[in-house]
Structures are given as C-alpha cells and as structure tokens.
Image 1 (cartoon, rainbow, N blue to C red):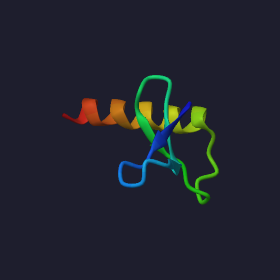
Image 2 (cartoon, rainbow, N blue to C red):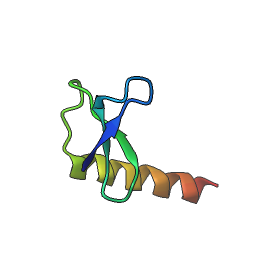
Image 3 (cartoon, rainbow, N blue to C red):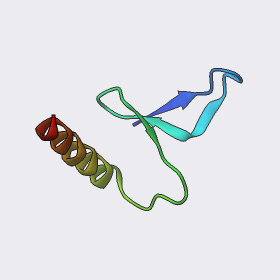
Image 4 (cartoon, helix red, strand yellow):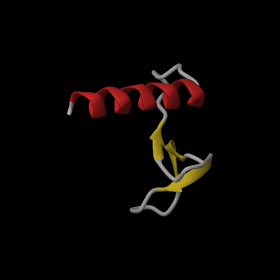
Length: 53
C-alpha cells in the first residue's frame, strides 16, 4: 500500500492509504481489522449490493 498526500498541505495523510488496486483506504485507530479483512468485507458488501439490485 502506498501513502496518499493531503491535497491542502501536500504532506502525507496519516489515515489514508492507496491499495495495490488504486483504491483509497481510510485506516483509523478504531479499525482493528487487517487490510485482507477489510478487502474481504468490501467484496462481500459489493456482492450483496449487486445481488439486491
């Protein structure tokens, strides 16, 4: 994962990361899940959304 820059200050944005597929991921101290767990949850939610449509 890469680092994202704050567009206002130009400095690295501590809570934001760029995933290997280019998506932005917000990582907060309250979120204890790993990247793999977050990606799996995203895929599951996307699947449920598409099946409901």
